[in-house]
Image 1 (cartoon, one colour):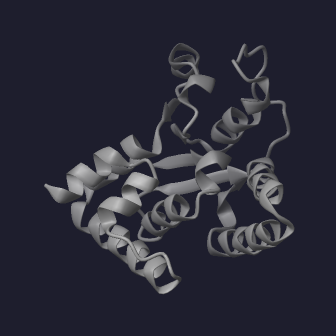
Image 2 (cartoon, helix red, strand yellow; image 1 turned 90 degrees about the vertical axis):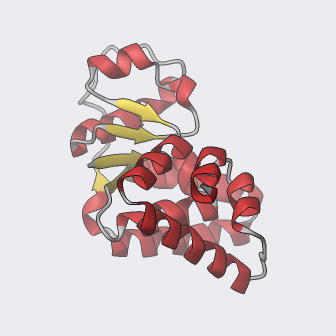
Length: 179
């Protein structure tokens, strides 16, 4: 399964760590475009120059770990789309270029369901996507979430898994991991 990861879910560190660590063992193949990565870096730059540098390093590590995940954004794959936010067209183009069936995004309203269905694509919230991965492999998801929580604790962000998932806006995954 191939899924384009939108910039709005790559930017939050914990969410990105969970998603990328689940791609490692092959639960899905992550895809993105250079423009998606540039949006992530731009969002970090709005916080501070230091955050922009950190994002640059994290992007370089991500590209090294998944060198085949970058999709072209040539702007010629999709024509005449009426999107709520025309600036999101490149995300759809990346999905089509990479043969992805999913776009994982926190901005579902920017990807209308009917239009996405016509393109054989589906926009899915990261909580629903992770819940699907949990259904497919509960042990891998539980282990990954625990690992990300442990890493955050080592870096000074000590919190419970439930607190971490709440902050990451992943309530359904949190409930699934409790049950």
